[in-house]
Length: 498
Image 1: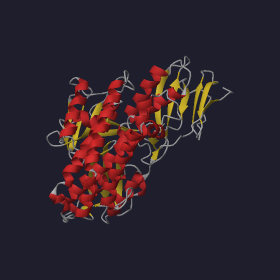
Image 2: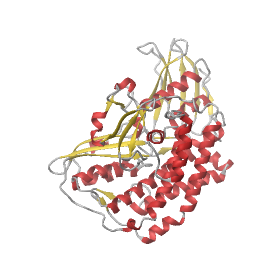
Image 3: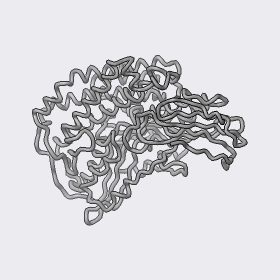
Image 4: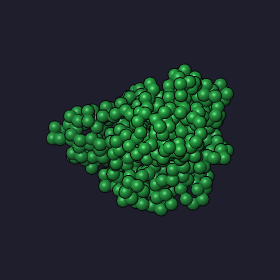
C-alpha cells in the first residue's frame, strides 16, 4: 500500500520524503527524509510500523511453553529465539545445575545450522543483486532471478547452502521452520547415527561453497571504490565473546568496544544487561533505541551482528575462518572496521566458521550421547542471551509461584542496530539526495544501506517480492514537486500530476 503524506508543515518547518515499504528485507518498515526549504536533508528516520506484542501475550503462560511460542516471532531465525528462550528457562528447571553436555552439543549444532542458512539466504538472495549488478541496474534484473540467470552456479550455491542448514534444523527439530528440540533443561531427543551420517555426506561441498561465497564477498567489497565510505556510521560494538576472547555464538560473556577500538567493558555477565544497556523510546517508531548506559543515548548507541562480532573477538576458533578474520581486520589498520558494507564480508566469514564448526561437532563421538535432560532447584528469574544471525539477542523472564510467566523482556538484534540504521540512512540521503531528482537507483541505495544490517523489521518471514512503493518530495510550500511510484509488478512510473 502507499503512504499518504501530510501536506501541512512539520512542527519544525521540515518537509517529508517517504519510502514505504522497504523491499528485500524481513518484515515491513518505511523511511522518512525530512527536508528544509532548500531540499537539504535535515533528518532521516527508519520507522518500524508493525507492533510486536510477544512480551505481553506470553504472560500467564507456563514457562515450558515459552521456547516454542516465542520462536513464532520469526520465520527465518526461529531457532535463535528457541535457543535464547531455552537458555533462560533452563534456570527455572535447573537453577545452577548445568545442562547436560550432549544437549549443549545438539543446541550448538542446531545454532550453527541456523546461522549458516540465514547468512546464506541474506547474502545470496537479498544482498548479492546490488553487489553484483549495481544499484543502477534494471530493477527487473536486480534480484535473485537475475542472479540465477546470469550466474546460475552462484545462485544455486546459495540455495544449496541454505538447504543444508535447514536440513540440520529438520533433523534436530522435526521441521525446517518452527520445530521443537531444545526445551527447558536440555534437549528432547538424541541424534541418531544414521542422521549424523546423513549430515556428514554433504560437508565437503558445504565447506567448498562457504569458501567460494567468502571469496566473492571479499572481492565485491574490495572492488567497490566507494564501499568503505558508503552509509558510514562509525559506532561502538557489542557482542558475546568466550573467556579467552574467542568468537562465541552460543554462550559467553558481553564485550563492548568503543569507536576507537578500546574496550568499554569485557566479560560482563549477560544477566546484568539491564545495568549495561538502557532503551530510549521515540514517538515515530515501535522499535526502541538501545544505548550503552555508561555513554548515554547520544554517544552510547552501538552495532551488533557479524561486523560487531568479527571486530570484537580476539580470534575465531576454526582455522579457515580465523585466517579470513585476520585478512578482514587488516582493512582497519589496527582499528575496528567500520564500513557498513563490510557486514557482508563479515557475514560470510561467520558462515565459513559455522561450516567448520558443524564438521567438528559431527565428528565428536559424544554427540550421540542420550543423556539430554537434567533437573535441579529452579530459580524465578533468568536471562538467556545468544548471538542470533543479526546480533546479540536477549530474552529475560520472571515466573510466579505457579510457574507462569509474569514478566518478559526481549531485546532483539535489529533493535540494537536501530540507531545505526538511522545513521546509515542519513549518510546516504545527505550525500546522494540533496538537490537531486528522485530516482529508483537513489531509492535503492537508501534501501541498500538498511539491507547491509540484514534487519528483521517485524521478526517475521523475509519479504522478498517486488513490493509496491511510492516516494514523494514535498516542497516548503506544501506542494508535491516530484513523485516516483513502483508498482507491485516492479514497473516504475512518475505521477504526471506532480
